[in-house]
Image 1 (cartoon, one colour):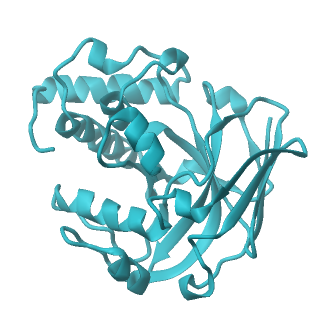
Image 2 (image 1 turned 135 degrees about the vertical axis):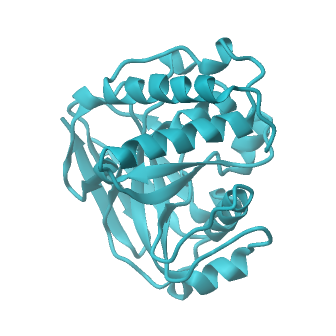
Image 3 (image 1 turned 45 degrees about the vertical axis):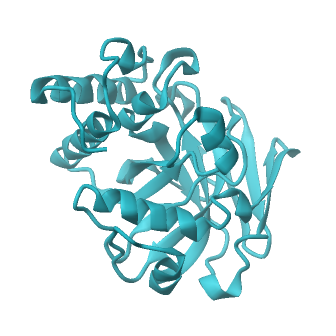
Length: 265
C-alpha cells in the first residue's frame, strides 16, 4: 500500500477537488480517469489530506468507519481488504433526527454495529481477541453513504480517496457490553416508510464485526497510526446499501438493541 504515483501537488489538488464535491454537493467523475496509475497509497494520502483540511477548518474527527466488509462484496470487487474512512463531527445525526437531502447527492443507508473502544488498538498483528478486550461497548448505527462520483461509476481507489463515501450517520438504540451480545447472530431489520427492505445478521461483517475493527487497526498500523481509546468505529454494512430520498422515514431494528430512526427531509 506504500507505493505512490502522485506528486504532492497532485495529491493536494485532488483532495481539494474531491472535498469540494462533498461540501458543494456536486458529483464528479472518478479520479482514476485522469490518474489511471493511482495506488491505494495515493488514495489514502488524499483521504488523510481531506481529513487535515476539515480539522484545519475546526471540524473534529469523531470516529472511523469500515467499508466493503462482506466477503461476498470483496470477491465481487476483486479486492482482498476492506477500506476505511473517517467520520467528522457534522456527520453525526441524533436518533429520530432529520437528514437534509439538499446537502447530499445520492444517499444510501446501511445498518451497522458500532464499537467504542476503552483502550488503544495498534497494528500490525491486531486480532479479534485484542478488539473484544479493548471494547467499552457496542451500539447500533445507521450509516448514510453518499459517493461523490456521478452515476456511481467508481473503482475502489477512487472510493478511498473520497473518504469511503462517508457523509452522515445516526446512532441510537441501546448500548450493550460486547460479552452480552452474540454479534455473529445479531439480527437486523431495515424499514423504509414502514416497509421491510433488508434483513441481515452480524456475521455478514467479516464473519464477526470485531474482525472489522482488528483489520482497521492493522491498516492504520501500516501508516504508523493507531485507534485511540474512546474511538467510535462503524464496522461496515450488515445489510446491503439501500437508496433513500427526500420524504423517506427510515427505521432499523436491532435484535435486543432497540432501533435507530431518521427522516430524510
